[in-house]
Length: 267
Image (cartoon, rainbow, N blue to C red):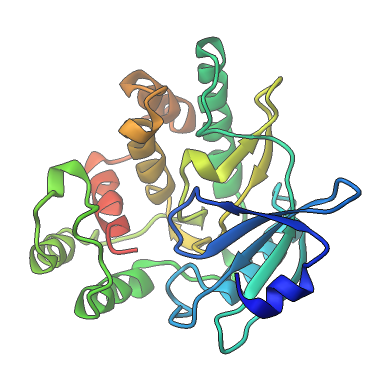
């Protein structure tokens, strides 16, 4: 932790949080009266369009709260030469990525589908954050050029691909149109908190990539996560259950789901 923040939050006990893929340093802070906060610390090389910039996440969190979404209350934030930091109040609940009893997993998946549908019903014209292909495809090209794509952490079906091969596949499969919704942008089980007794959603976190995007993007990442070995409690049946509840008319295109999983490799 930075020395200035260590001094600022000296009254709190600090515990590093290792979950998540954003690259930001995250700490759980506990006060003497039981207060629990989260401190996310950025890095100097963050780019505002990366999706994980502190200012991007703060702006999105403030906007999402105004829309009535169950997001963490932002208590303070600052962007500085060292990258900036964001302080939020802890959200009650248990991550969808935690180990849930077998009899509760269907309810968790249903809650994930319902939350996605509610998010995607928000008025697109009211969302000021652009995550359309006009932004994300050039960002993918820049990420490859700068060597920022972790080629050792690709999806199994792309393991061993070079950056050039990855980018060539992306550019060859860009959809000609977009069905825009307000999307989370990194919709996966660790970013959704639920009441452990009712499986009701209590929090949506890590909002740095929230914005106007195609409606396939969130289902693409969520279903991939449900099939990931990191979330071994879930199965192909759970992924199918999510899609059936989110999209009962079966209108999502498999090739677009694949494209948005590919696009995520560049983030």
